[in-house]
Amino acid sequence: MKDCFVSNQMGHPVDSRGKQRYECFQRRKAGLTDADYKAKLNIEHLLSGLHAQAEDLKRATTIVEKELGPSCNVSYEDLFEFEFSDQGVALEKSFHAWSKVLSALEVPPRRDIILEYLKGVPTRNPYPLREAIFNFDEVRAELEDSPFAWMLQDGR
Image (cartoon, rainbow, N blue to C red; front, top):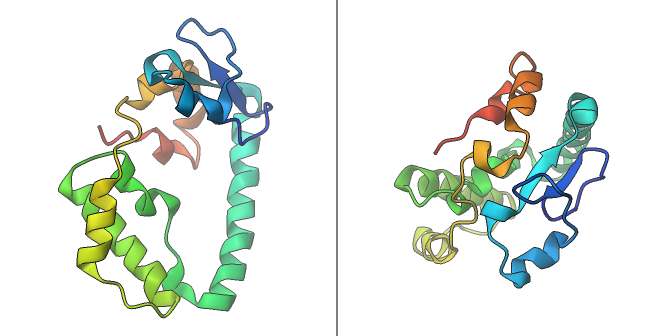
């Protein structure tokens, strides 16, 4: 959302007062802080958009499993958990996810190399969801009784 890789129908980046921002991916080079660059989700299209993305993921998973087998079925959240926390549990979860991917590609995973790389990547989002999403209370109300309620879990 904040990098503008999804349709504006799902939402857009805003400043801390809710005014739309347009830096998108360039924000990373502009030195903008996450405190003044938030995601504002469009509640009207949130559930339908998430359902559509879930269906896309199912189709993609079917294709990947057909080619690489179910051993490669790992989530984005597990692969990149290490980027959002410097905790050992998060690092371990990402290590195991990347090991599955490498094994599916018939590349023997080496713990020392994977961990060295993962530890070298700085955390990306030190802010809890409440601070990263401008209209968090609306989002929470929309998602809390849906199949996507798990997305409200913050881990911080």
